[in-house]
Amino acid sequence: MEELLRLYEDWRGCAPQSVEQLPGAGSNRTYYRFWDAEGDSLIGVVGTSREENEAFIYLAGHFGQKRLPMPRVVAVSTSRLCYLQTDLGHRSLFDALSEGREKGGRYAPEEKELLRRTIAELPRIQFVGAEGLDFGRCYPMASMDRTAVFFDLNYFKYCFLKTTGLDFNEVKLEKAFSEMAKDLVGDPDKHAFQYRDFQARNVMLDRDGQPRFIDFQGGRRGPVEYDVASFLWQASAHYAPELRHELMAVYLDA
Image 1 (cartoon, one colour):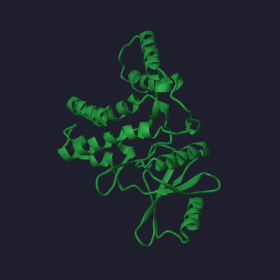
Image 2 (image 1 turned 180 degrees about the vertical axis):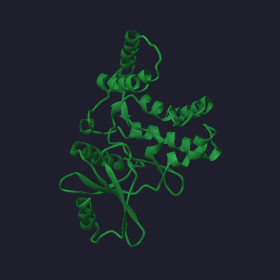
Image 3 (image 1 turned 135 degrees about the vertical axis):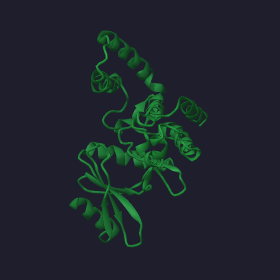
Image 4 (image 1 turned 45 degrees about the vertical axis):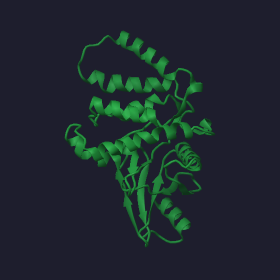
């Protein structure tokens, strides 16, 4: 935290008016919101992996050049373990959808509109974002491969399926996993930028309710369908099949 404070003071020329630690986001990074005397804010990040930080800094700069709605990195510490980024808002899409979630997936029209706005931006991130991108600078790998697919499939098997107590044929399951991995990886030349963690918690809403996107440092070259499935089949969202079909159509139109 001390290094991050020094970085802010060096960049801003004075100490922050106030500092607020933000809730954890399921990673080793720690986030803070810095306020200045004028009421403007920045997000400070303390990471534990230089390679992961470097990936985020590079991707943020690249996406900024493409005018995509992502944060801009304004200062980086000499250790590369801390950086400051623009603040994209105080309310996440996940928070904005809380009422519909609590109603078991009965989302109000304004909530559905937020979902439509969000998924309509995804193709721009995937395809415009891939233009000129040096995938070799992605972390922890440049492209989605069979090993990465099996990370997810085995997570499902050991952390969900085996905990249910259901009987299943593990040999047949592994064969199905192999076929799925083969289909997902497919022809890498046809892949675009895969966000990798495209979910409502990683979408911030600005004052006009427009979506802005964070936590893309795990992105890589990969099948774009992965992001669509990650978003539409979030376990806690309880999206009705009709809403999924509608949002899929919005994505395809975009």
